[in-house]
Length: 335
Ligand code: GTP
Ligand code: MG
Image (cartoon, rainbow, N blue to C red; front, top):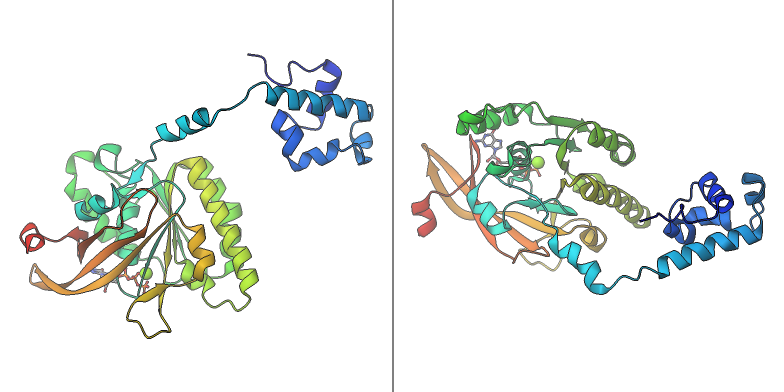
């Protein structure tokens, strides 16, 4: 099949190429089309021999080309229906069951919860699991981990990676080798890092998971809400585009704050504006139950899906041990 440019008269094709407007959609829809507006005189300096008639021919050809290949709703839906997004396992069967296999590589997944509830521990485990091969629930890819609050817990990650490597001795894994860490404590440097530096990392390395721990800390203290909304959109748009382009999961941590109506439930921070930018929201809470593991009394925690387009609002309980995030022993789960 000929492409759009090939079927244009040579003279018109040269004009389109010199303006770098290469597809019919670009001729009709992109900001570059401003150059093709016959009222903009700069077009004549940009392409000396371009006349208003040439522009009209180019626009007509683009419109005709698009009109000749009508799209039905069915043809638009089919590719989408066939797409199967990848998932990054939590490395904990109970959490994988309730989330349909882990964190999906589509849009932003938010994990919120109170201080010390286990958000970072869960993310460290995801950072290890994404490196596992496909048959073990990973993507065989690395992780970009951006900390905005505390120093990255490298020692704890080492402890968990040793435990995971010991779990799969036949795989000869090196799970500390594909973790790229950044510390960004201010909004400007965070945006700069995500918008300008992260794309380079994504191009040069195979990255399956981007983590921001946490967005709550960065945006919480803003008083100019319009500016905050603008920056949150900018950050989210960049992250969503990376998820699409590189088929990677994006997880942002958020904090919670007490509701002012006196209810005992905590609400995720950053309001409606942020909640509309995420695709999936999960919340971790402590359950008033404890469980003894290797002579240690551990608090039971719960991961609950608050919303997700493809999974029901399920929940699962887990523990944090020296090895990482694990499900409750079978006999306890049956109680
Ligand atoms: P904030 O970052 O303060 O919002 O908290 P968080 O939700 O990220 O908490 P974090 O993931 O740091 O988890 C805190 C809990 O994980 C602690 O209460 C401990 O129970 C457990 N934990 C943290 N570090 C370790 C560790 O090195 N070993 C073990 N066994 N448990 C740990
Ligand atoms: Mg944390």
